[in-house]
Image 1: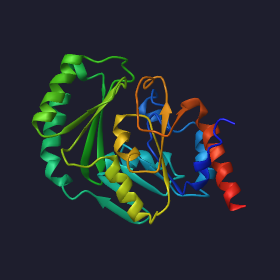
Image 2: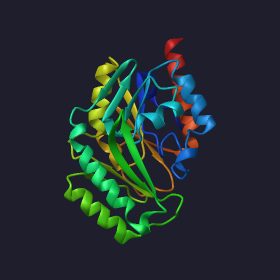
Image 3: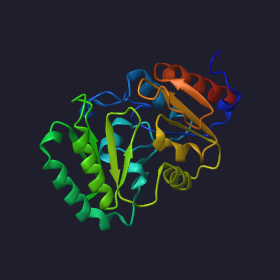
Length: 253
């Protein structure tokens, strides 16, 4: 069978990206959630091994949609929640004036008003921005590039995704999803092999620090190469999770 892979039995935790991995990428933000057949498998999987979600979305968005998880690294890891522990990056408060300046610039550009500006929070602090044109279908590239240049001038890190209809803007603090994996692993006391699932360039740092990186293939990343042990097409994800469950159950019994 396709997913009968020896290493599945040794997985002791699953860390996963959200958009484009366990949730469809081309759904409006307010409708976004894992498909029911994926959600149900993740709920069952969470009874056997811990699951953590690592995403560019903020915790207020993620947690209600991913209640099967035991931990979350939100907005790239600027906020991390594990049980009663809540960690917000100590340098985030230094970026608040710059965030407010950039938000004012974006909101003042007429040709970007039909795009969705997502302001992400860690507690009361702004932790990131996304400019999302999934609903619009296209965006004024000159206007977008002007925002990108200004954000970079202010010291922000701008993440563009090949083929994806949004960009992310984060403080120029040297953290990434690899940092998030390491922090979560420590806080969750995980010592065994981790499987990480992702679909884009910003998942590469996480994939490089786990034992079993898995890529989720969809229409927006058909030609993207990632450092993975296995590619799973998005429509095959429930089946793949089912094989993982079967492997874990066989180890227990």
